[in-house]
Amino acid sequence: MVDAQRKLVVVRHAKSAWPDDADDVDRPLTDRGRRDAPALGRWLREHAAAIELVLCSPAVRARRTWELAAPEVPAEPVLKHDDRIYAASARELLSVVHEIPPAVMTAAVVGHNPGLEDLVGLLTGEPVVLKTAAVAVLATEAPWAEVGEDCATAVEFAKPRG
Image 1 (tube, rainbow, N blue to C red):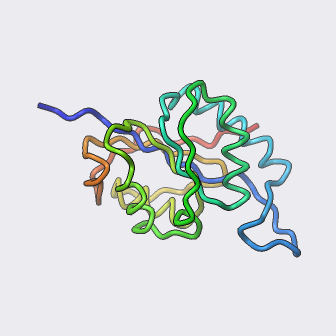
Image 2: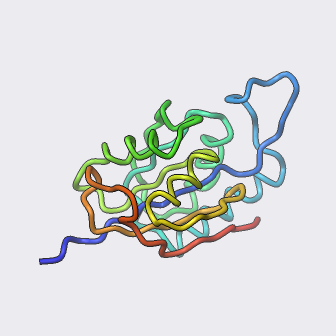
């Protein structure tokens, strides 16, 4: 018997600004980032509309990216902000993935590099570049708690533009 295929949608936040007076976690999106985030949402509507759970970094740029993308996604996934995603390594992100409830078939992680690129590389065995507002859709038959090295395949990569 073959287990059902799970999908992990890995989303890097949209382009952010570097204001002198803002801590890194408080960096806002640039004009381009505010244009690209809804385009990301439109892409998700066409390619990953079944997202049930979104795990998002608490950083302003990640939260705002999802806020602008979410209205374009027809499903209304559960949104959880997870402090562990901010500045996380691939292994730390993998720990977050391991906690996705077993009943969830499609989940998204909205966060930052280099952790996201490293996570995709860890799971697929292939190096990847995720520019701002880029998305990688990975598929695996492993239960979330057992997802690990080289257990996923990359289904799609995209860099939607607004």
